[in-house]
Image (cartoon, rainbow, N blue to C red; front, side, top):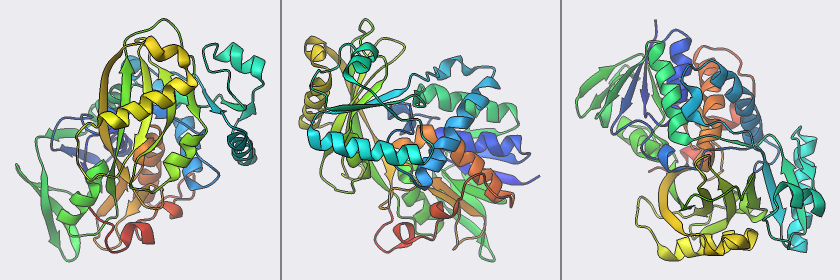
Length: 386
């Protein structure tokens, strides 16, 4: 039985631990804090295909979207996941935006995504409170949402039922190697040995990699979300401005913001989103929250008098070419990486775990995993780590 040590108990680490434990590995999950308490707890829970153009990330998203319902059907405690296949609607509010949105949706349809253009009547029926200043709208019925911490907890619990062991309060400090192969990790609570190690530390995976003696170009990118007080039914899909896709794909260090509005089962409304490269500076910036609110009101003017209950922010694992990192480290045998998903880690977690399982067992993954390889320039180039 292969002993696998998963470094990180966020949703990607939890999904990997579950997949490997079910495949017969003896899995130990190592977490310096609490499970699902960092990046996972500060996300919106998106399971999206709507924001990804044709290419490898879209294929990973479609694989994950197929897997999520199958996995949840087999979990005895899936209620806390709050799976909601409510679909998404992307709207444009300018003529230029309308043309770009229609072109983007057409390219997605050619890749197999269900993306149907909506006329004004259909949009009003689906989202009666959205702005009337819409020049184009596209409906994505495959988009879904989960409660992030609940989903991660359910996946981790299933891993533990399959024999995985969770070790919290253990910070990774370095590697134990023998003959060019990693055989253990030194932690703040002692050495943990294994035959394979999975770096699933999210925004901290570049730092963890450095401590293990390898370079990994994954850095933090910060995002913030506003949460309103509970409201009567107001927003029925995930609704966002077409500018969101450009913000996701941008590598700029300065603030990138676009309107993303969706409700939760508790009745609160989540208002996003922002992206900033500020290292691990966790200070909340009022001017950023103001931009988010202003853009959200552009989509839903009816929210102007709705009180904001709280705001939260978190770090996401950013890679310069905007693709996840999934695969074996070419410089240290026995080390694997599953990171770099930025804001899509919730949705992509289960597909990532399936790809990792196949790669580790020498099987051909369902999708082409080569674009996610660790030795590509964006991940291995000088100056990209940390």
